[in-house]
Image 1 (tube, rainbow, N blue to C red):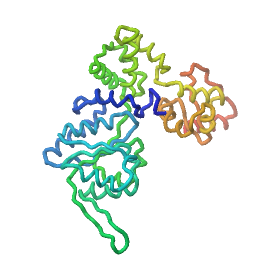
Image 2 (tube, one colour):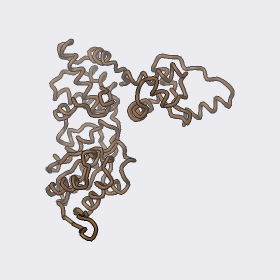
Image 3 (tube, rainbow, N blue to C red):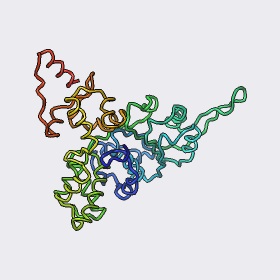
Image 4 (tube, rainbow, N blue to C red):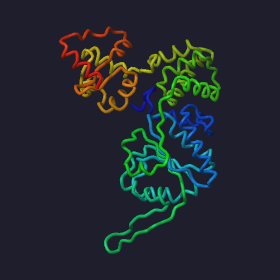
Length: 349
């Protein structure tokens, strides 16, 4: 799952690439225009008042730039940033140590904030609201409550599962933004910027070809650029043309819509083995030798976004668009009116 070239999750190779391509200023951040404008106003107002920025929560699909925006906020406001993640903070004492180590107006970025433990979250509540820590030391009659003042800071949380963030924690974020998928124009602008930083000559047709297969995700776009750059360097004098991009991405088995081999396996299993569905998730997983949770969380969202797949009470159903993409005729589902209506209702569910 983490090794998919067109997956939004972070891969090992992304770290160095992200550092080199990550913008330092809000003006250099491509896309998410409404979010940027609102952030700019909030940051300017906080600076004018001499206060820390309100706590910020970014949510949305992986690879949209949540971590990058946190770094941009810190750079724009001239403060230090401390980066950690929800799974890395196991005990309340770990969180207390992190918060007490911050300086005034510093930014604490917590990735996967929905994975914080309940005890850890409870340490954060008074720190976020009133900038003090409160916990109990000792047990029984010897127990005593300790309150410790901490410098005012800004917590920036990032999550791909907004609903999984505990309601008390969610309510303490003053600024909440969803980062949406990028349109083709924004992805092309991002690719041109990245190619210039990497010193790669990319012609408009090559940029367009890569953007079309990037699933509207900046992280995937930069990853594809790196792979196409390698192919161009070896086989095409280092210039990324439309034809070079097509050949490079074809070798990587990424089609015109950004679907990879596993995406095609999921669709083919439903269409060819089960007549387009409905078919259960566990059955699909068994057919392609993949975990059911992985299919539901990683593969299905993009297929559903394209309109290739629909979830019904009886299982997954491949749509006419999926058949068209696979180059297969859509089956004649004619039958009794009641049956036709039932199938239509399932596909609309």
